[in-house]
Image (cartoon, rainbow, N blue to C red):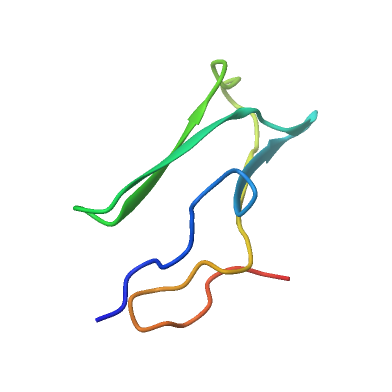
Length: 68
């Protein structure tokens, strides 16, 4: 079984809101295989945000999840 073989960063996981990209940090727990994005500031309620998975992120079968 193949798990993430790339470095998870804000370059391949992004959160964007009405004002553009949301700053924050990304962490990856190899034990649970969970990537987490923590915004630097609180998000605004009732506001639409878009989370984007970038190129190089795959599922455990090796299928790409991101977009070019």
